[in-house]
Length: 377
Image (cartoon, rainbow, N blue to C red; front, top):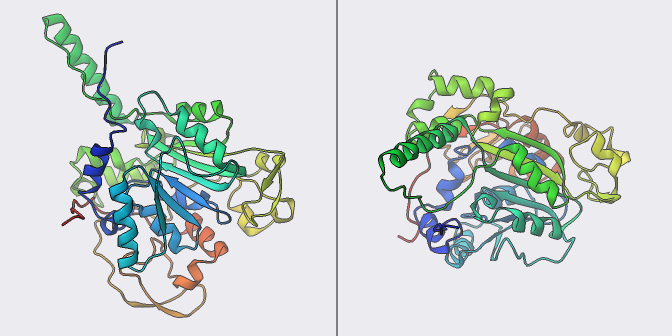
């Protein structure tokens, strides 16, 4: 087999990538990458979760603000050191550790949640090892949220174009040089198959993020994404239809199925397998008629609450009234209004029943360009 240079798991490549960015800008780009409506809804509220391959930790910081017990793991020691310093400087509660996603530093059956956002596709040998490791560390009823790039309309076009060019080169006798390996694109069906091979029960396997391929086509400036443009209309109109299958990401919600599982609503070890026939996550009988359980019914659409807002101004700290408690609070200088279209005070946001409802019904999609800011400067 011809040797192909592998840059997908090259630590120097990733350390250099993260040095171009900053945690604050990563958080404030909000839905530059779609999928927040999935990730925040299905992350467990009881027990510990890990984001394996967390990069600059934007979801770890964000969900820690909601009171979710989550920590970040990445193989770049330099990045981990920086993040633990940055959190202290900015008075944020979040933990980060250096580690390998194929050999996690957790005992068997110990975690309630595992999040992997654009990581497993970077293994040239395939995603089997990190997925098997996710299965090992999750407890009964634990939830794995895994995303990869999808074989979107833009990727499909580029693949066809490359094959055509290579065919022409072969005919005219020119050398065909393969680029270094960086990542695969997996369809939802392919990703589901990988998870099932490792023992997971896959509750949801779908595509999302119709906006991202247009963002890439527009050079990541966002000018072609503004309200009134074709890309904005198309993404908002068809994100929750069958056309989403040509979106930028594949996403799966999977469960470590067992005869007795931890209930997603209460955190108690009293949910049975038959609950997964009705719900996406394990829910004990005593909670199956509850308002929160209704948010996790099978085939319920997972969607944003309104159309994308493109390149809005930053929300400066200002006093607001919480829609849930009536108390006055100030918006956060980093997290703004926490990405929702309802006003919520920090103390109230940390209540599981509140943030689950917000993450299911009130995600406000905001797109801002990814800013390149070297954090070492």
